[in-house]
Image: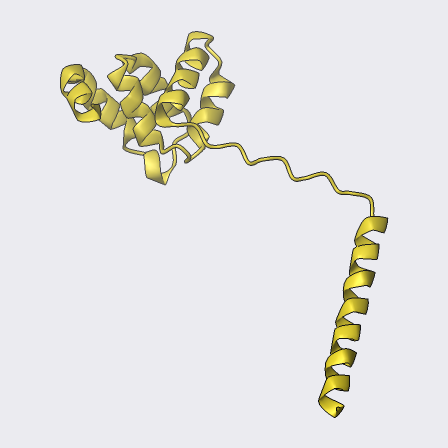
Length: 126
């Protein structure tokens, strides 16, 4: 009989706690859900943004695009070179120099000297 009373007491305490929690939740104004976190651009999408900024001669926009690490600036340059946009790739590579991208302009220059093999890249992507 004593065990039954302990179970009843525990059930009663749990019920009261749940009821007060639900009542408080209903009294509080509903907080809006957090906005979804946007997915980072793919290298192709970032390359398209670079082309647009480069064509518009928007140095600040180009610098902002080059300052991010997501997507990787090396992959963005590769996507630009794949699109035969060497001038945009060079401008992008020089826009926000830092330790991770200090050799990026040299890479672009080396690819300029040797034509980028677009057909081979298409085979790798497929």
